[in-house]
Length: 187
Image (cartoon, rainbow, N blue to C red):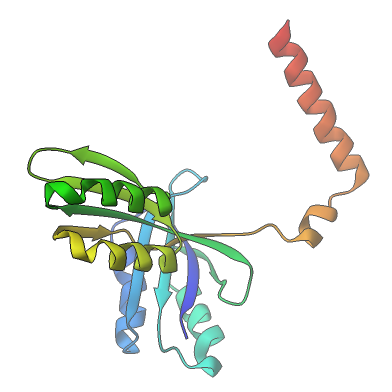
């Protein structure tokens, strides 16, 4: 079963290497790895999708990542509600009579055609890994020249408990602030 980990890490040289080495040392295959800046200055967010981590070792593995230098926080979100997305770019050289079929296929997959040149066609799509697997499979008959997939990126869904835990006082303060900002903007 796949496991998805979020890791917040100081944006310093060697941080990613130390994280990846934890997987390598335990002979765990990383299926997807995406790194980028997050909402906090100087902090990067790493999303890792890994396979074949034994169920009794998942929490231990998260803790071992958490003990690394520069790691701020680790969360295994596999059993929690989260949204996962991937980006796919596909360059093709389809026969001219198939261009309409690709347009229909792109529309069905909520993809868009970025380049429709005389020698190649590039399609871009964003969606869940399953949706992207299906798109790639559907495009195979159109002479795929290049295929690029980003790693999965994921974000936790806000739990209803978290949303309702905000007190009425905090909500009214938020509303007062928004009203003040709106009034300042309008005047």
